[in-house]
Length: 226
Image 1 (spheres, rainbow, N blue to C red):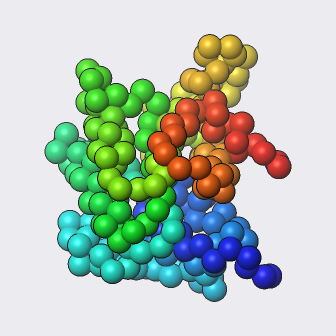
Image 2 (image 1 turned 90 degrees about the vertical axis):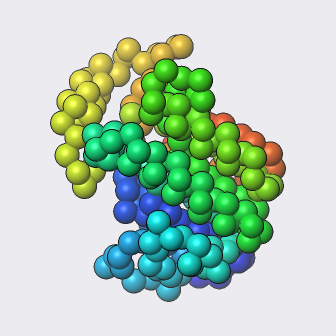
């Protein structure tokens, strides 16, 4: 297969729900000649385009020279329950994300696509949403030519960890899909694979500036050519 566009993509969070789907889509895309993923330990996957870089997120500056390419996709994130404390949650969802984004910006990466969350707002009374708003704000202040903020609603897919509450809600939501119409459309749960497909569509748009994509828009973009 001839690669017309020699873009290099950088991916953080390749073992997560959206990140794992995104990794395979990027590897299959003719728009990329290289995909560099940053992982805590090597994953059992081999592909001509794939390069794996081991990272200690508490010392990400040690692999700064590897954070070079055309686009950076940040799919890092946890939950308050899994993190165990506000400080631990903040470290993953803000500090790790910001540190790698800043290194990419310093290295001249032109575009960033960040997985955030519906309801992200620096003024929110909900800690989760407040942190998401803070990382959006501060990444927008870095020197990227293009910033794409991805705000999905409840993500559907096969997670590596158990989340009983989310699983129950997703089952209920699937059976009550008629509820998500009109102004409630943006609250409809969305498949992780659909979000990943939407991100690749967005990356192909070549639009500069800051753009925010809510869940309803992601649903439409992710279903293009399905």
